[in-house]
Image (cartoon, rainbow, N blue to C red):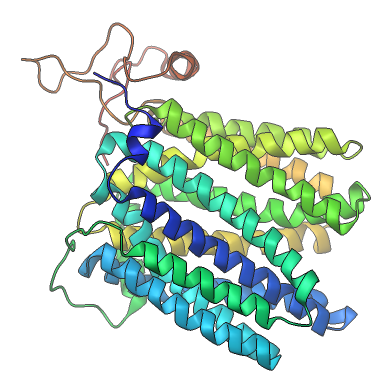
Length: 465
């Protein structure tokens, strides 16, 4: 079998417009959010700064918690390409209202616009992740997800950094920022029209007025599938740890390392750089299949280097390297799980499961804020202690999952079966689809785990959902 490359995947019709559409959307969301956050800080008193920042976070998360059920239904009932185009068009409306809010100088109105932008992202997300397996063959899913995750985190870092710069430069003329946000929304919408058309998964189906029913059905589906439930929990833990790390690193940089705000911001960008590199590496190492064996390697690496990071308070360079490696292994961890969720979701339930995944992810992000409050304000833990605790917990959780689900050390795709022997997994020889480095690590741990059990294929197979 001929191995495919990133160049082959990027060359797929419509993929580049799709990637640029989502990149500009994530960039715009984070640019607007950081500007609103800084506006809130400047408008708040010293005693209420934390509360205003928390309010910004709540406003951004709330639409995902309230409307994910509707978003999943819409993504299933209508063509996902149509959903992407319509939601990008609504981004222009929200951006125009943002321009008016900046010109009026009304903080409450900027909060309302931030809510609308997050609402647009709520409906955009299930269609964004659900359309990939409809646009691409399975062999391109891992590489496409690697590019998608890489570009998303680059957009988050770039949007946050440029938004901060624009606020500092034009905080007295925020209408300039508003015009930029509108222009980016228009560019993203124009690109979305070049995304290839796909048929709706459930044409003519009725949309339930109760959004919680869809989330409930999604959660019930996850409970009935060990693979899917652990996949969503894994993705949600990635977002939990990422959100916690983002908050803790502010304290770690300013309190533990004694850095100013600028250098603390520079330090936190290394996590996103690592995630981007890890996402691309995951896509490349996966080859033409979903390489689930990368997930445990990624989770162990995240835990290990979180512990190392907790001991690097005296050196900016060591802290930056450790944080980059935490992000790198985070990319290895998240990409195969996202690809697996897309692959294992049924054609008529992709929108519902993506929306349920978003809902659980947002809960995890909210729990991260609670975890920081608990460890910092209630238990009085220092930032480096918080990093150490959650690094250890990540390692413990990784070990537990591997002890109960050894399938996570097996590639999700079966090797090609020889002609005339349908359904029989290969049990001898090298896996031609698995890079040698991953094969050695994965199979070594796998055999240590299974011992004398012979009911699993050595080189992977299609295990039950």
